[in-house]
Image 1 (spheres, one colour):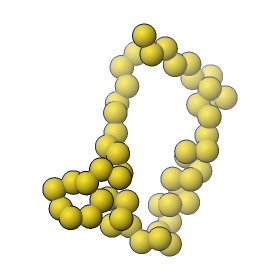
Image 2 (cartoon, rainbow, N blue to C red; image 1 turned 135 degrees about the horizontal axis):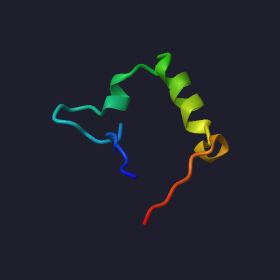
Image 3 (tube, rainbow, N blue to C red; image 1 turned 90 degrees about the horizontal axis):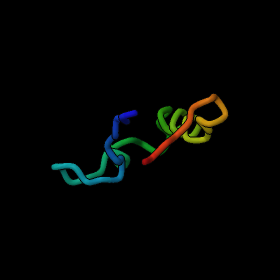
Image 4 (cartoon, rainbow, N blue to C red; image 1 turned 30 degrees about the vertical axis):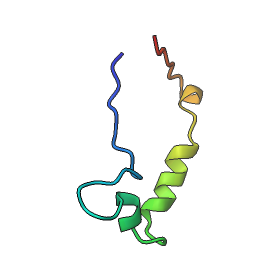
Length: 51
């Protein structure tokens, strides 16, 4: 299965600050990010085969 690789938010783009640095510390997206990162996809039946 092929995976879609996203962009690392800490990677510096063509402009001076990172995407993560462009968001304010109290932005709602940070809560969403914490919730999504806490999910274990294997608990939902997803399997990973990195061969």
